[in-house]
Image 1 (tube, rainbow, N blue to C red):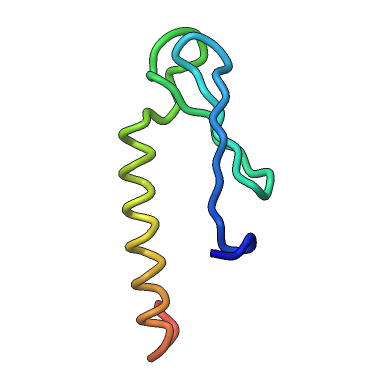
Image 2: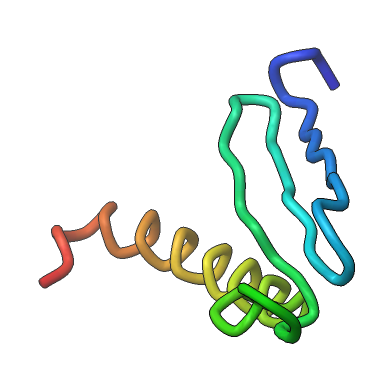
Length: 72
């Protein structure tokens, strides 16, 4: 892999049960255990995994359908 294709995410602990993931481009997402002060609306790690699987599937479908016609 070249440097342009490497994927890197760093995870920083921001509090008990609370974390922030940062990608190489500077994008961030807060997640945690879903409990504690300010954690009620955070994604849990399992929810992030489900979102990642869904996102990969959606991107594949988008590319496949876009080859034939713009989806509605």
